Amino acid sequence: MNKPLVEVQDLAKTFEVSAPWLNRVVEGKPRQFVHAVDGVSFDIGRGRTLALVGESGCGKSTVARLLVGLYAPTRGTIRFDGQDTRAVFASAGGQALHRRMQMIFQDPFASLNPRWKVLDIVAEPLREHGLVQGKGALQSRVGELLMSVGLAAADALKFPHQFSGGQRQRISIARALATQPEFLVCDEPTSALDVSVQAQVLNIMKDLQQHHGLTYLFISHNLAVVRHVADEVGVMYLGRLVEVAPKAELFARPRHPYTRMLLDAIPDIGMSGRARTPVQGEVPNPLEPPNGCSFHPRCPHANERCRSERPQQQMLGGIRIACHAVEEGRI
Image (cartoon, rainbow, N blue to C red; front, side, top):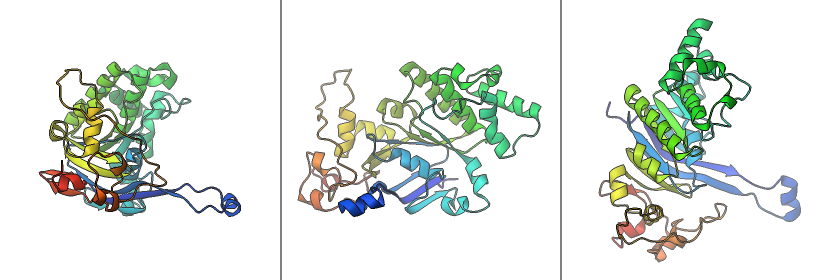
């Protein structure tokens, strides 16, 4: 039981973004590739929550889609409960594995079919996996799922456009819970919602985790949300994990310069007087990432080694970090 439920090792995904073949021939342009995820490794223990944070375009959502099998990895392995997911998804046992892991998408206005009633939306995974037989039993189960996320059983007869954004996201959560999964991948599930509604949805998710023993991968760029839900936090930058640490440790003593920059961008409402580093520079073009450490053009601690040698993730003081400056004690 001490073994992690999810183990990710050296995960990578490359997308080709080249111009059409004829344009390349006429204009003499080479093929172009984006390394959306580039050598990511992490573990998630049973009943725990790992949050991935970082600026838009850093590869968080790609990691989510790789974990649930929507994308095939270019390199690396994903093990779920000791099984290699890529091999299982390609075999007859793929459907059983999909039942054990589900995903909640970012936009509740796009992830629900507007032509279906809520009954059909939530019942779809039940029918697909053959979990409930008979119309009456199906309606009863859908009603239970809706009530578990704070909606009424009678809402099953309505269409998605009759609900607010927060209510739609609750429907998405109910649909994800239909197969009684062990692992939920949550891709910024509250980013499209008002702050007060975010709190309601997050509290529902925490209650469900305690009640069902769920394991979460929670993706967000909102550090206040992450502080509320996570046990561990992984910080991504340009397709790589630069720091993975327990939540309390990361917020109290951020080590990586990029983590510090993210935390310093949060308004200091308490006016603590702590020295803060302003956000510097822009995210580099992912088609032409910098040599060495990808963060070195924006890092105040970068030296020649940072510009030429790519840092590898290692354990330092109980956290995993990829930074030459931290390794050498320059920070």
